[in-house]
Length: 273
Image 1 (cartoon, rainbow, N blue to C red):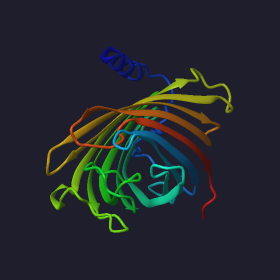
Image 2 (cartoon, helix red, strand yellow):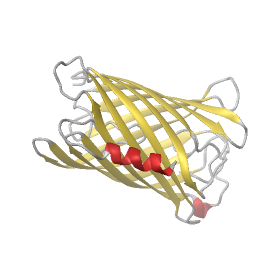
Image 3 (cartoon, rainbow, N blue to C red):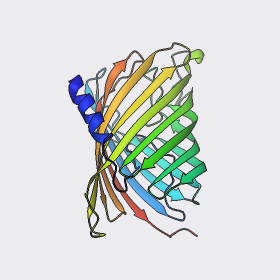
Image 4 (tube, rainbow, N blue to C red):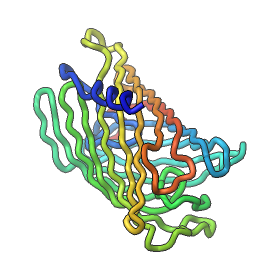
């Protein structure tokens, strides 16, 4: 199994000849969406809850706003099945990113951005790992850098998270000292198809591998996840992602570490004044 991981990583890290995408599935790059554009996303995750022994399903509708070439904002809702067949609104979040550095060359660029997120959630807190996609109320601040060179995009981020008490008297039960954590990520993506551009109607196919890590600042416990992703871009407007995230190392407990991500996205350009 380890040989498969290494082979896939080497595969996506080799070969440079044309333009690559940097639209990662589990992380955000330093680059922004186009200015004055509007993006609509529908994210869906299916994770196996090992504690309650059911499929935990989260549906996350998202609106993305390209305010300018340096600033973008995401507004996201969180709907889950809460262990049953009835779906309810669990929470929501707002995410903002400011790109403050950009170095552009003919076939490459390097960018750095600051980002922040505030999330609200009303679910019962049932794991010490902090997760703003349907589990915790709190905030996150961080920095991300992304390098694009022809067919390869590499992105890395580090951020500080703070968990607050959830609504409906659902407090963070793991102690005040355990409310803070650090996230750090590494994402690598490669343009697989087309080999050469001959038409605007060609579908872009991207392969990527992402590493998602978190360490609790008090306990020192950590998880490391790996997530291979296949992505399809149609006419630079429509996007489909399919990814599978699974735990490589886990001393920081989570109820559902492994599962699938599906994403549909549609972008509208030059629609904001």
